[in-house]
Image (cartoon, rainbow, N blue to C red; front, side, top):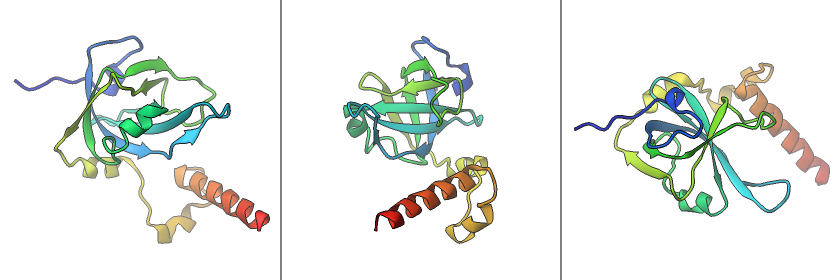
Length: 157
């Protein structure tokens, strides 16, 4: 019997006993919080309807899932903690976020859904990134951050 799973839009706060089939669409570098006590790593997951959810891993869970949650791979994720997203977090892609921890079941799915993933994101080659610098899209934002980063490095030298 085929396993049934929910789409991201069908999963609510405090809901239990659910499974969703998702693709790792974005995976960010782990960072240390401002209080220097907590490490966190954000990701964006997408389902086959195009719904997105931000998820976060903290401290030892980052290491535990390092080789499991890989960009562009598909997974069945069950029972992550579902919370309302704090509006002051910039990386938010919706009203809820999932917290993946040791109690979360994450199983790889042997499907290649990269064509779907690439159809939902605007991918630009590195050679053409300069064409997006004046746009207020994700690539333009990334380029502005890179420009700031390089200016900061140059000022320190």
